[in-house]
Structures are given as structure tokens and as C-alpha cells.
Length: 132
Image 1 (tube, helix red, strand yellow):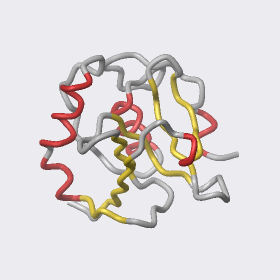
Image 2 (cartoon, rainbow, N blue to C red; image 1 turned 90 degrees about the vertical axis):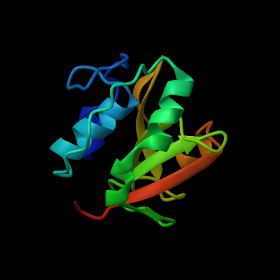
Image 3 (spheres, helix red, strand yellow; image 1 turned 180 degrees about the vertical axis):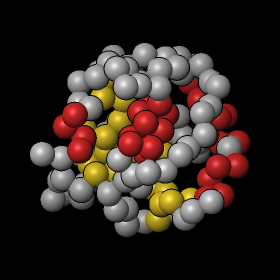
Image 4 (cartoon, rainbow, N blue to C red; image 1 turned 120 degrees about the vertical axis):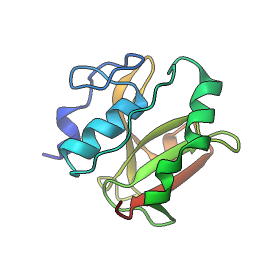
């Protein structure tokens, strides 16, 4: 059993931080704390507002504690974008031999796991915790 199995199917809800439901950042924060022993900041953003989400990811200083990587490992944060700025996030998991997968909480789906190749976002950037 993989750690992600306990989360798959939990519903998406704007502003939800878990454990019963999440928005995308709430899911990443919760799993980072519970599985990877990392405390990430809480963002006050309307998860239903795409522009607000992009501005939040673009403007956050918290990324100074993360290194951008090209070869992700289990638990690295994935920032997903269709343009220049990310509008969604998830966590890399190594359960798919074809390049890994992303666990994320998506509006209308809840927590899901998707192969990197099947994600609708064209630009995926990975970040690894470098410590505070």
C-alpha cells in the first residue's frame, strides 16, 4: 500500500486543508506535514479564482526553501501551469514506471493520481525541499 491510497477519492473543497477534504494547496500542505514532516505556509487565496491562484504561486517567498529539480523524487512539489505561471499544485509520486505520477486534488475530482503524461497542464516544474 502506498501512502497516497489513503487520500485518493477525498473531495475537493475551496479553502479546505483536510483531512476530510482539500483544495490543491491544502492537500500538498497536509501530506507534506503528515507524510514528509514539512510544515508549509497557509495561503489565503480563493481556490475558485484562477488568477488569484497564479498570483499566489508566483509571488510566494516560500520557494526560497525549495530547489527546482528536473528529476523529481517522491514528495517533491509539482507546480502545474498551462502558461508562464502555475495555477495548480500536487506531489510527485514514484508509482508509475513511465515517468512517475502526480497526486493532486482537483476541482470536480477530489484527490486523484495521474501519470505525468495524462495531465492537462503543459508546464510542470518540480521543487525539492532544501530546508528552512
